[in-house]
Image (cartoon, rainbow, N blue to C red; front, side, top):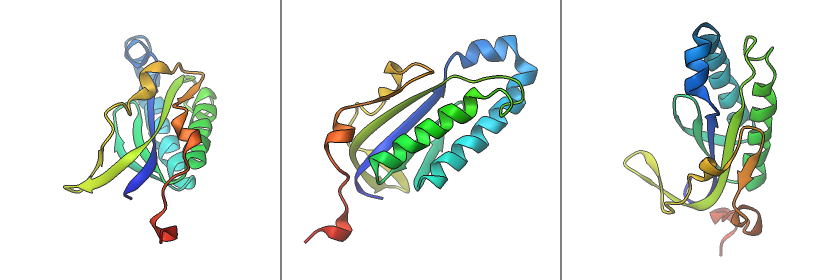
Length: 142
């Protein structure tokens, strides 16, 4: 995966407080969180670049696939039944940017990809460029 891709960053809103208040519920909830996130990314043709403890850093060739994954993650983890009785509010940030593989890792060329800081646990935030520019696809280049 090189060229222009859409990044998805997620984070559990208030996870530190949840760990302090509900440690016994957070263990299985986090396990379900990880499984649901991986499934949402893979089923939407994305790549999990890194699990971040209480979130994910993923990359997608198509912006709509990244958005579909973010919506699936938020809907799935908001259901307390899916997370063993503890509803999780998930911040999701999307960013369209240039990447390259370097030393077996996906390297961002844009430093402003961490848009997750602007999102709350009920919304998915995306930069306007994520919609305005379709992803680059080398298979269709001349």
